[in-house]
Image 1 (cartoon, helix red, strand yellow):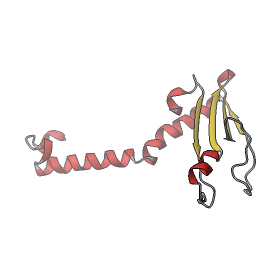
Image 2 (spheres, rainbow, N blue to C red):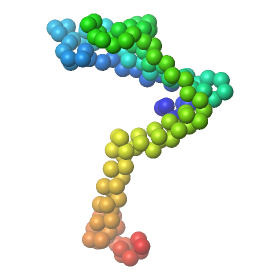
Image 3 (cartoon, one colour):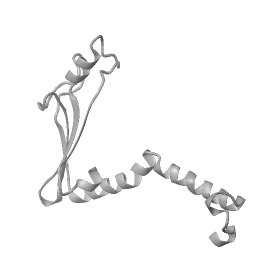
Image 4 (cartoon, rainbow, N blue to C red):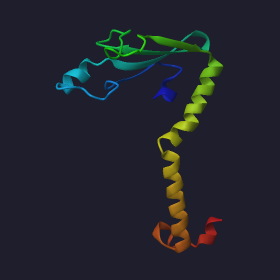
Length: 134
């Protein structure tokens, strides 16, 4: 979504998280629903700039401390990057996301299996000689 929406539209990603020790106590659903959401908001600006803003929000109000007793700093934390920096970040995401989610490993495994099937004369390549693939 980030790669497709920017730089034309704002992108917002959010999720609720568990307390640092992972324990919610007796009323798990109440604790989780009252936990601040981690929000990443990426907004295109003038002159090719893009602003990345990270915050903890409860009921749409930002600047929350994630959990009582935590040493986390209340937000928002914000960084503005210029067009060249944004392009570099986009290219890094475009090339690394398939690897991080396992897409390239899955494609490599499928390619290897197809080649092995072709060599063995089985699978969907059974009726085609292996020499045709060189």
